[in-house]
Image 1 (cartoon, rainbow, N blue to C red):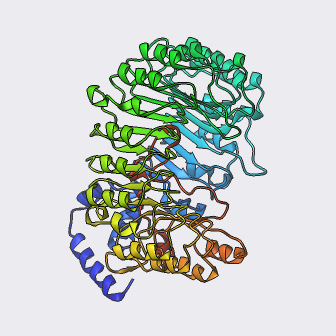
Image 2 (cartoon, helix red, strand yellow; image 1 turned 90 degrees about the vertical axis):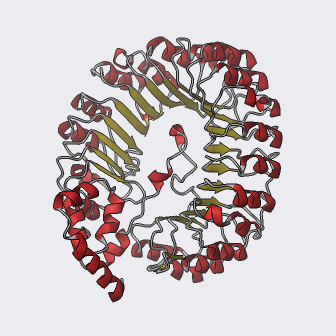
Length: 617
């Protein structure tokens, strides 16, 4: 920070210091943790105020960075008012358990708990008696870490007020009998929502027989195979269920006797109480489909589902427009529709959309290859659309963009693998007033010339995330045009753009924020497999460039020493060289659909704080 800026902030602090302490406290307690960190970087007075506010914050949510233990201790002082804690734990181990298990907590969400063991569950049982919601992912996945069923049982017994439990952990390591036993012998009268990321189908059927779970209203399971038997077990046991999410990824083609059929599909909502239904067959291991379900099954389901508000269906290859139209016309409350691998869907699905009373806000038609521009034009009669996903529907092109560009509430538009061109981007840039995220990954007709056409004045005010990965015609020239536009992009994905190189990195690094900062607004930059990026570009990834960058995708190659040096110099930067997708972003949401932009919009100035000689806060 320059002397001139420091003097200006000190002068402002003198004025702020005259405000009543109660007023300052009221204002600061309405801010989130990243905002408090940003305020603390401005002057001593606000640093003191922010530090004091941390003792009284009711919620501590920090998901964009994974703080090490010493930083976490600065940010999490003793606070008897703390009710909600959400944290990325990838840099934490068992030494942080005491910091995470605060006695006042009612909600705890911990992601990437690779280095934490089952001791976490034991400490939660001992210290967090008022916990109502717990979500833990990847617990004890690091080599040398483990957790046991006895630790899980101790947590269930020690948290009697638990209402929601999410365990993103592989439960196949436990026997069905032992796993079911702990649920049978534990009182769980308040538990209304349960999510388990992977559980064998046989174990799931046994689990659902536990009387302690019969009051569940929300259930999400990932199993090895969804079948009539598991759906019947759910339907017969969980009489109050309103949300059902089932996903499988078979290792082998299911037989007719062990697969889902029309009868099982009808059983999924035989009481008619479901508001959300998700049935998805993943292609993680092989291309398998629900071959036992056809239009008749969807017609039967539609008759008993008048209360459905959202539905997610994937892998129903034998269901045609007739079956899906029955859902649309029989579910007047439906607002979210997600279909993947709908190989039989055509434009007839939406041809009389305007005649229905539906008010769709989220629509996904991924890998529905018979859908064309005509279907999208009919769909665009829903003026309340906020999310539209047309990924890998390759017959969708520029005429579809012409139809949807005027949608007044559209925020997320996913066009990966479609047939749009620079003309379509120009149409979006000239007409859209609300778009936050645009993805055009793998669209071969997009070139450098489409960038300035997309980033016109109206789009610059809203656009935050852009994905132009696998665009073979995109080069450094296009990124230079992006940099010159002054767009405040926070996420930029350019993976596998082979013509993107050092010049693009330099241009992005020199983008200015508020006319003063050297760097850019970028928080995520994916350059994986951009082979023209060489060792020369690494100097631009170091401080003070890209001051807000939290996720960086690179190809390591022979530059492993430079990558390791970068990680050491920027400990809060998540550098990925394995090709995995970065962050959650503005367009992925897993079981919970699409993430809210505000969850990813966390401006952190922690690295600047670390450079100062003072304590963080």
